[in-house]
Amino acid sequence: MKEEIVTDASLRQFLLGKVDDEERVRIESLVITNVLTKERVCAAEEDLLEDYFEDALSAFDRERFRAQYAYSAHLQRRLQITGDIRNWAIGVQERKGASLGSQTSNWSSVFTSSRLKPVLVMLIVATVIAIVIFGLWLNRKIELRNRQLAIEKEIVRLNASTSNPEGIFSLTLRPVTLRSAEAQTELVMRPDIQIVELRLLWNFSESYPTYQAVLKRTGDTRSLVVPNLHAEIDRKAILLRLPSKILTNGTYQVELTSIMSDGQSGPTEEFQFSVTR
Amino acid sequence: MARDLATLPGSFNEILAWLNSDRDVAGQMYVQLRHDLARIFTWNRCSDPEGLTDEVFDRVSRKVHQLRQTFSGDPRLFFYGVARNLIKEESKKIRTQVSLEHIDLAANESAENHNDPSLMRAECLELCLQKIGSDKRELILDYYAKEKQAKIEHRAEIARRFGTSLEVLRVRIYRIRSKLERCIESCLDAKADGE
Image (cartoon, rainbow over all chains, first blue to last red; front, side):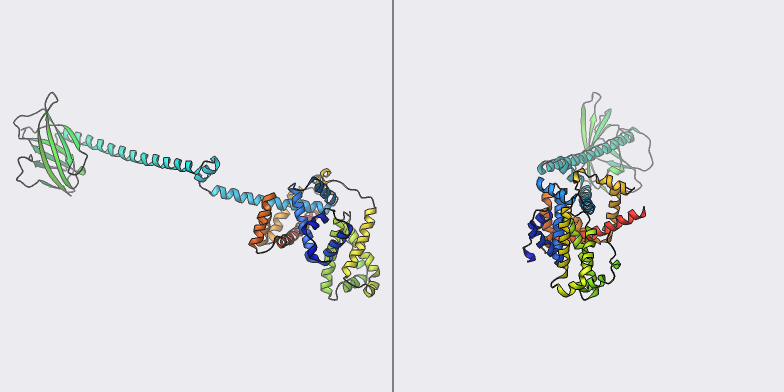
């Protein structure tokens, strides 16, 4: 009798009591004399117990299994322990899976839970990114606009006042047409200068109720419009006060337009100056 | 319960001497033989495997002195032959047999133990898993992690990982399980005694 000819199938038949006496004696003799055969029978028995738990036995084998294993308290206990070990192993595995799942990103959970197609997820992600970028751009634009409004308000306030606040620096500018031969007026900015007062010399004989200045730095697309400017008492110059913080390095152009009482535009003068910080 | 063979003076030493000339080896063979015979009685649906195992040793001990002179071959097979005779005798008796479907295991255990048996088993399992070591614990966890169809490929994969066959892996798992099972049995017995 050789151990090799004991197959797993025959061991299973043996355990279910489906072998004849001769085969039974052969296997049992090997169990007594050969450790490996005994271990193989026991391993086959474990498989059988598992199959019973998983309801993987045929109806006939299930009945035989019950007949074989029901009567013994020892086997019942083995059955219970097998069940405990299986449940423990499966439970640990499930907890591991759940733990790994909880570590995945929100995006992946959205992806898996909603079963969205990858392309659709990419589109959603792209849309969200676009919305975020647009939001940032809009926010920046609103911020710039608010800053502009704040500056415009400050400029209106400065030009409405007739007093001479501290930190004011006055700079007289001649119209471009008159000073073409002269060097460009340069404003060297100092830390103590808070307000720059531009005295825009007005060479026309007529005077007007108000004036409007448009300030623009060379190279910039934006310009600053300052309405409701007034002439000095002697009407020789129009005063334009600006906060020093808005003047950066570069060449500035001021277009001064007279506004008549009916709101129509009158004569215009142009001035230039440069700022050095 | 197994009877103490010290009640059969002289015969126990002769049995050991017959099994192997090295007393230590003989002692191990004796323990193993008892265990194997009990299993065989169980597989043959005998109601008292331990008692029948005792009966085998009782019968052999009565003639061991003569057997040592006359019997040729593996003495364990003689013990097995006696066991087979007992199995035949047993099969003639009317055996009360019940189906698992009609057994309320929890109720039976409740009668034995005042504590929740499943809770006790869970505690013992946890304790014994700690004792077997992390390598074996991980292996058994991995082995039993899948069910039904998935487990077949999964176990083949484990065997490939260990560079061995599925049969060898199953035996390895059996050894770990066997150790675990003995530990759980002892733990449950200790808990039962503690009540």
